[in-house]
Length: 213
Image (tube, rainbow, N blue to C red; front, side, top):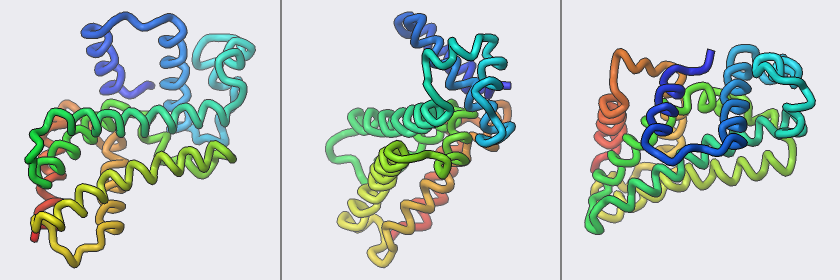
């Protein structure tokens, strides 16, 4: 079953934005169903025929959109991290020029929790399947992940320079700890128990208070 939080978020987005093209809707559905299968059955145990059957389409139709299972995986991984980075960069444009490191950190955490929880199965599949990518897709995805990690390192480094974060804190270790914690939010998040804003606030306190100078 496709993650409910992601599905509801998609419906909400569709209601507030221009209609998607049929080809884009098809691509979206293919990636959502594939993510669900990868999460439940594992990447190696899932075949293109399994994916086509779950989609209710012929294998040839699936190959028209993606020529291999590896291409599907690469699309899932790229879409997930690209969406996360885009949301982070967008949220920063709304902050005042004199925003503190803490304000930037809290805004980034909130945006990440929201994006990752809405990604649902796609986010979980992304966390579980990187090792199955081949070159050049593996290097391309690794570069994206380095950019995501560097985003958090930059906030930490800025915090150190402003005296808001302890200077003895290894920024590489801290950023990886943050990324690791955020990665699996979609695995356990339940919208009927907490909002993404509430989870984001908890994460922000846990991490920033732990790093505070």
